[in-house]
Image (tube, rainbow over all chains, first blue to last red; front, side, top):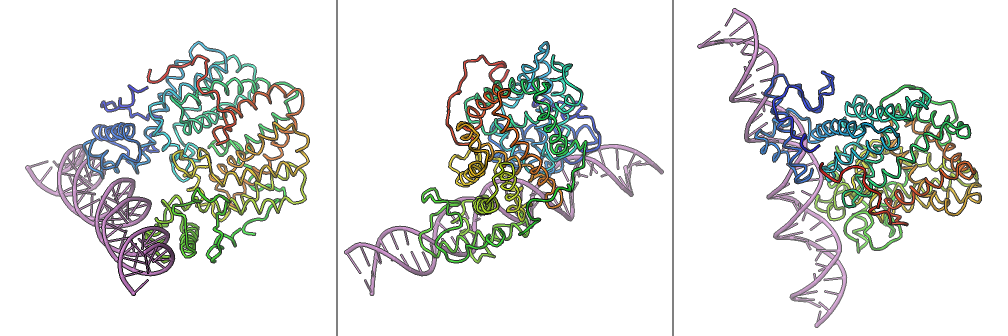
Length: 277
Length: 277
DNA sequence: CCAATCACTTGAACATGTTCAAAAACAGGT
DNA sequence: ACCTGTTTTTGAACATGTTCAAGTGATTGG
């Protein structure tokens, strides 16, 4: 996945984050019209990624990026609304790398737990080179106001790509036919959430080669698979039903799915006071 | 909880964040010797809180804080290592307010689910005035390098306070005697994690008076209580045992508990490659 | 009372993200 | 070729977090 990071310097027509849409300005600001501007944009993004990797996010100044890319500072801001939006560009790149890499690694494997593990480990491998820098990305993602956040921001193309991957993890496994459709609908998003937890864990992981996170993945994936498998048994029914309700009412809408935008102001009497006692 | 935020302008000897320890420099930099410097420190922190609340974090400049507090910019940096460390000061304040408020609200209530709900709703009430601003705090907390992070940073006094509160939530409930000691040991930390999830939810919540988060708390607390209660039944034993293992090996050590720092480099062969294919 | 020391304070200087008005390059029509 | 509007590019100016050498004042030791 490292040999692709700088691939878009080449004057291809397709941008790195060719997520399909034409309107929402993928990761930056201006929608490039000419081919040359595409090149400029790519040069800036590539240079930024390289410097981020080399020196870290904070140590890399916009001036340095501009200079190394052979443009002016203002030009960088013409293509990227702010320094943080460069991260968006990176995230889009990596998500696509991950999706492709994971899909190829999963090939032939039918066991759900293993497929899930492969997908997650693949992410760790794809992100390995950016461990230091990714902390900064995560920090940004935790800002609800930022349009970079994989949460909150409805139309985040990268998330759709990732969720699709996890849908594939499920549908390609021997577990898929055994599940009722309702649960099968929820799972991709939940598995994506699982990835987010792993990412959180990874960001804070300081062990060599993030060995601890890898071990965490190896241990947690069979556990998750087991829970899903067991959820079909009668004894777990009521619990599962409640969990489903919680997820559908409160988790998925937050992630931009909004399948059930109810439960706005519930009738149940509030336990606390309203605001300012 | 709003009438206490600015309380420490008064020349009391006890600082706002009187977490007990004497060494680790509570939220800032210099350990104040004289009473006057205490006052200066408090003035700066109070002014900062007020301005953060009024204008938001980003809009509040260090110059404005200094000016309003009647000191120089450099002086603010004498007491607070950076702008972010002012957040630390705020967080310490709020954690104590929360602990006290929650404890008083729980009085008399023995039902575990309700106690938990009270504790969480209390947090939402304590934090209500700072919703806008707290997003910024959360953002900071997500940075593993920052000493403000409730994760990663081992000796975060505020977390200890919060965990203690949740221990009280449990021990004061009718559920406590029914649990084996091992689980009772884990729970306070897990409930603190639950709070962290709620906080995450809250930060992203844009509904009026964070109604959605409140509803989420009301729905999720009985669910959590039910899971804990059910965990004692035979059918759930193996699942519970696995969950315990995962938590003890991977979650708690990350939170600074480090009860079992094993599982460093596991013998199980890695599924992927090492680094850079 | 002097001087040395230390806690505290200052504000100018610095580094860096960001903005903006103007210049340059470009495209299309005449 | 020339005008006209649009896209792209520039670099100086700005805003703000942070640093630092120097200043102030009180306390202590002689």
